[in-house]
Image (cartoon, rainbow, N blue to C red):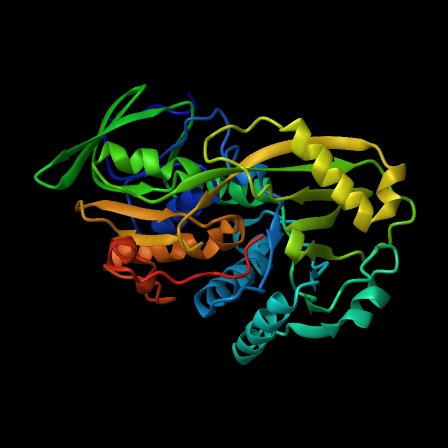
Length: 386
């Protein structure tokens, strides 16, 4: 266990991925004096954050997600100056390739909305896509959308930037501690029971990602989080790969490619994946995904497999996150990001510090993303999920 577990803390955060560490940092930066983060793994950011593909983008299908990206990516831009850690932000651009007429119409509307919000997404014809990607087989491309400021960042660098500066400002980060129960009395959070002892607290922040539903159940809360496995593989060097190769998404197949070292990282969503916490590689699906990838990008036939990894999405019924208070007093939520949480981690910490210290989030109005929306039928569907 890294660090001693105190007997009490004003604010306890459960989960040491990007959401949790960003929340801890921004709380102490804003003036909170007694913040404790608990992570069950030995190292921070090794759960869903450490197993994500590292993509960051402005291209979303709802205004609230675009606004979260505008705020969060600006924070990644200035991350090194503020936190002294290089986030390795590479603006290779995201190119969504559309092969389905229904998707084409939806993306036209999305691009118009993004441009209205000041996000410089471009509309491309099928010929534009083929010209940009001569090394790929997109004869069926109808159109594409491209934003040159989308790209990649390094999850570990961002997590450790927040951990190191959070510690410097007084937050406590303790790993190798498993939360076992949450004590609720009089409809208020009173304590967290862990493998290393009991910690009394006034506030508890659930940033447990795919495991957030289990954490909520400890307090008697129903949090609609569905964990789903996603997996990817990276290749050995591809000498013919252009240096400016973008993050390419074959949207209809939920198949993606992005530069990784001197090769490619590729993955594809399995529509038949069953919910659960299994993070083992599915070799049958890996073969299907790699065959689809080679069909789109024939040069992959000449590459070897460098690495492979599986992680978990934390899906909600409308593919939007859950922010803010729950019905149990002192219980707060920042979870359910449905596969795009890493990129929204920086702004999430700001919003959660505002919720806890000021009573509401003011930097961005995320009041429509509360837990109660699921019972009240106020879902906001995100079209652009890969």
